[in-house]
Amino acid sequence: MSANDVILLEDMVNRSRVETAGLTPAEQEAYFVSRHYLSDYRPSHDDLLSGVVDGTLDGGIDAAYIFVNGYCLRDDTNIAALGRNPQLDLIFIQVKNTKGFGETPIEKLIVHLPKLLDFTRNDAALVKQFNPRVIEITRRFLDTYRAMDMPDVSIYAAFASLKADQVHPNVELKALQLKETLTKCFGSCSPEVHLLDAAAVSDLARDKPPVMMHLALAENPISTDMAGGYIGLVRLKDYQVFITDKSGKLDATLFEANVRDYEGESGVNRSIQETLEHEDKDVDFWWLNNGVTIVADKVQPAGKLLQLESPQIVNGLQTSHEIYKRGRSEGFQESRGVLVKVIQADNDLVKDRIIRATNSQTSLGLSSLRATDRVQREIEEYFLTKNLYYERRKHFYLNRQIPLSHLVSIDQLGQAVMAALVQVPHVSRGEVTRIFHDDVYDVVFASENPIDMYLVSIQLVRKCESYLRSNRQTEGQVDDYVFHLSMAAAIALTRKARPSASDVAAVDLMPSNQLLRELLALIQDEFARSARAHGEVLFEKLAKDARTTAAVHERMIRYLASSPKP
Picture 1: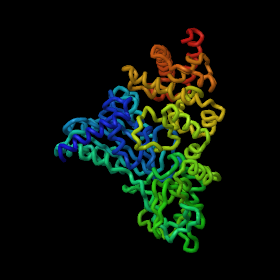
Picture 2: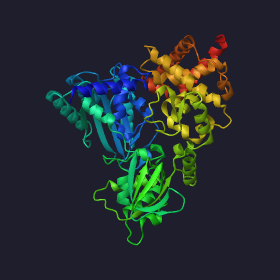
Picture 3: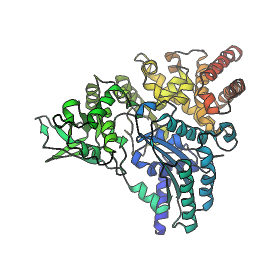
Picture 4: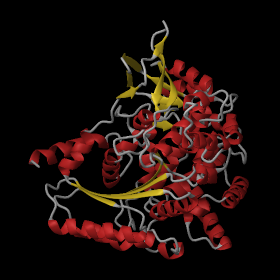
């Protein structure tokens, strides 16, 4: 490695700080390394931010992530129905802006990970040693592991030193000890420890995910006079290659969906499994299956090969998952085929029509179908006039160097509205994916809601988040307080215990720091009362408890009766 690698990496990190201006320097570095180390998963900015745990009592962990079948797991929604042998990945990342690797950071994980990854652990005891985010993510991993049916587990630990030019042999020995420690925690797991110097991190940052992919067909495709539409048969083994990444894992970036859109052990999927497992020489697989629809920005045929630019599988998620699971079995050499429809469409409105039409008779993909709703496009257009970029689709603004403060994901907006308007901050905190469920979505994104309400809601949450991050007493508990504080602020600003969408939309000034200080004191008091009443020591569980929300709401009713209008 040359000295230039260190200088070039420093330039890359500094340029990225513009995008992450609201984070501390250490958090920015953790975000940067995580973004590139996890590039095969193509995580969203929500995914990346959810794993940054750097701070007091972090146990030597700067970031931690859980991926299930390639999708980032960020909340506590039950995913037990994913079926047999799902892929479960746990990743720990530590970043140092130093000239060399030290043994101490690895030694910390050798000591701490056995405590955190113990199924019999005592969370009350861990509170004194680790911060809430570290406890929450590792607990979620253990709960997910136990809920799954014989998952294939992989654990990765990455140590990045942004100014290092070599790895000392003693550090490599410590890395081997960490691998042995993790193997003792989970005997069936083959852990990996990666030591990343400046050159390695630079290489990761330069390694861009492929935009162009190739789909091998069994025969030349059928096409019409309409440009860009093709139908063809793909051998199952070739389709398996298409939907897996270079490491052999399911390429989640191909799917216009999320982890919970896969229906696991449903009747339909069991039928697909049985068809795949019992090969019938007289019946091809595609005769019994509806096939797969792929949308790409550009499609270029070349004989029995289709070159696809930025492909997305918009229909056939269940079929794809079952083929992937079948393909992981030893000696998979299928000659049967799956019917694939490939459509060239670089226009968002056309893509929306295709997604909705191809899924109109299935229960697939609530998340992808919601993104096509008219209200979602209207919010996107309105936010653009306010210099905000609304990601109704994951990765839509990826790699465009847009600051995080100007990006709003559909999850973030849903959390904000559920807190300010629907007044279920515990759902915002613990079950963000419920935003796509009819009972929540139809309220959050009702067509009659004033468009201004969405802007006020996201501004309110971000004002509360900024205040909490600047407060030394709460900087490590932002996630636990922010949605309750946003609900309380909406009540205080509208002077109504149950503000309507129009009431929230009419808010023209954000709360002052003085008001937020008063409201936070009330919320902290109610959290403490709930902790004593229910014997709970983990703030994240209090924040996810409907009883805590009820207590805070009742306190705000008393606040309205006793306080002057701000």
